[in-house]
Length: 397
Image (cartoon, rainbow, N blue to C red; front, side, top):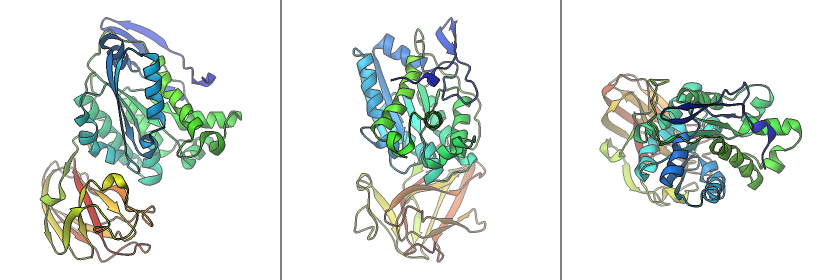
């Protein structure tokens, strides 16, 4: 099934390097194709008969029967003679900042990726609560790193929807995360699929409802089909190039974006006090649910305030990927001997879950070596049951 408002006027331009498309996206367009659509991906399929498609995002992507499965099935049916590889790199609760720091291990390590389908707008909104700057830095970190490693690849930037994002559209506004992600996608000239705007139009027309038809923040089958039809239309509306062409990268939208992302084993820190490094398990985390996908990792854990970490790093940003449970406390961070600044670990989803989240410990630093001291504070969120810290890895830009 196709929806009439999905159609977007376009002008096809033939260049010497092969066919290219140029689509002028009107104000309020659900799909923005950019100047090339996914022509490299099309050329890869049609000329080389093989392609790797990777889906990156939070729990909306992670669901095995969602748009990653549906889009993969559609591709296999439409191009049965293409040797496809599909990778679902969705990870529940993660935001675009987590995505930027996961990219090396969970995307680039999977080999060449011909098409990256990325979604983080919902988690940047409801989970991380990112401001515009951080949402830009996260997604630009993902997209720029991807093109640096896959210069003949393509990206589709997808914005899914939750109640607050939908409400913004219905009020004639755009949520911060959606606007930031679209700004990044336009800067890198990659297609945009705005599921929330599409749904708002259908609800206004009386042809769909939020809960019954779409299914809510985590879509039901009809909702995922709705989103998948948008994603696959980008591919259908693209004219293939003769061969995949190198994508020229513009200057960064924000030089502080996380496209020089790396991770650091917490064991590289020196510690003072009762820290312990051990497998993620009930022995390490006595309270709160532990998601099974984290049980294969080890973490550095402090069970009380006053414990310190010391180390050095080189870069403009230091973060941490943590499990913030019902007893999560607050870290205090001192860079280069400066003042101590608090970073709260407890999250509004922490009450019954060791919630996975990226926290920014320091940012907008000079691009040089820095010393860092971290201590578990006596202060904590009033809802927290303790003063703990559980660090899976540090993140350095």
